[in-house]
Image (cartoon, rainbow, N blue to C red; front, top):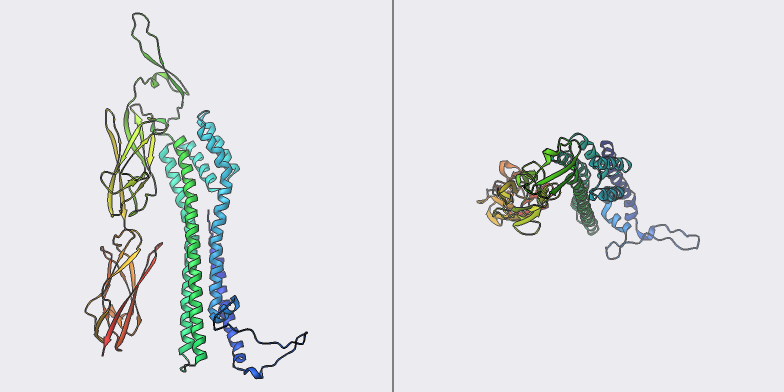
Amino acid sequence: MFRYRATSLVLIVTLLLLVLAAGLAFGFQQDSTSAPAQQQPLDTMPQTSGMAGQTATPAEAPKNGMATNFSQVTDQGGPVMYPIYGVFIVGLGVVIFQFVRIFFDRRYAKPIKTTIEKMMVDEGGHTEEKIARIAQLTDQYGKSNLARLLGKLCDLWQRDPSAEALQVEIDGYVSSVKERYEIGRNFAILLSDTAGALGLLGTVLGMYITFMPGQLESSQIISGMGVALVTTISGLVVSIILNFAISWAHSTFHSHLESVTEFADEFRNRFGRGQAHAAGATIKEVRVIEKAALPGTPSEIGVAAFADGVDAEKVKRPHREPAKIRILGGDKQVADAGAPLPKPLEIAVTDQYGDPMKNLTVMFETNGSLVTFDNNDAVKRVDTDIDGRAKVHARLGKLIGKYTIVARVNGKVNLSEQFEVESRPGAPEKVHVLSGHLQMAQAGVPLPEPLSLKLEDACGNPVPDQPVVFEVTYNSGRLERGKSRVEVHTDDEGIASVGFRLGETPGANIVKAISKSKGGRRLEVSFESMGKE
């Protein structure tokens, strides 16, 4: 799903560049051809009579300077508006394409999903026959991700029916789908950022039109400021719309992919085998019969087994006890603080003969940490299924660090396994100014305090190793090493600092600090200082 070939990306980028170039060329041409007409006095303009004898008049100007339609907005914004429109069209097209792929993937998966659900619920029939039937269905409905994944699982089951091998195949396929999807999502994010950058370009162009001629006239100021304001507003509006659409598509994609993964997990739980079943022997029926005691002989429990190639003597099991617990998945996971773990914590319990224990209560405990399960509690009891498996979903606490989660089975022999998970800082969501703001010193000298800030995630944890760009935006001041733009990475405490020398011209000095992480929000603060004469 969401497979963007390299040629498709080249075509999209080429189309975007052509739209940008054509928009700029058309806009400048329109400005050059309309300038003489604007300088011509109204009383000397030629008037022509139409078919009805009416005199033609110039195009209606915006009332009170406010644009009331699309054409007027485009005229006020100038040539930069056309690239903004092009970015909006291409970006919206990418997002719509994402939704269309999800819609058809769900539609193609629905018939096979309904049929296979009935097959997995049905306890009758041979496993090999069910696997063959599912493989046949995947060939028949092979257009969806679910069908392709199940087809791979059926093919792998013929070679290695173990639950571990099936889980590895599921994880690999899901990762490849996410990677392909991220290509399109990152391109849409690029278009959203480009729209904002084009709005800023229009602002600079408007200021250029206003101040570069050297003489400030009212008409010139109105024209330049109109370009600056209209392009900035348009760029921001397009960027906001695209960001909203991208977030919506991202949520829809992950919801759909999660449903595909859950269905594949059901396949693994139903047909995956542990080490004891790897030999290929399938017991069809095991019946425990209590034989009536004959006079003078003790009563006994006999076991009648009907199996494919399995000696009945090997399945005589008068008493079963849980003997081993092992982790199937979910160990060594790393996630953002306060976020749910991406995979469930799953274990399997077997008896002394290596067979799965059904309907056995497994207790999951967070061992005093801040981790909680999907019941919003630190403890959850789960009964094992027909394959002796039990799993639970967990959410990390707000503090960063490593946590231990215990899965325990109580009995004559207490069995337990430990999951180790780690909570890391999330994307920066908050920025705090620590020092350097509103300082005053002699013009041209370094400030006594550095410009310092701290980045925190949504849970208040410091975000280390996050790039922060400090840039002088007003006056001629210089940052460290005499540069006007410096990139600094936050330390272990989430703090980024830089020294600043005031500009030679007395007056205000402004330095902006910007942090933007992959998948996170754009954070921005300003440091203002005053240079004395």
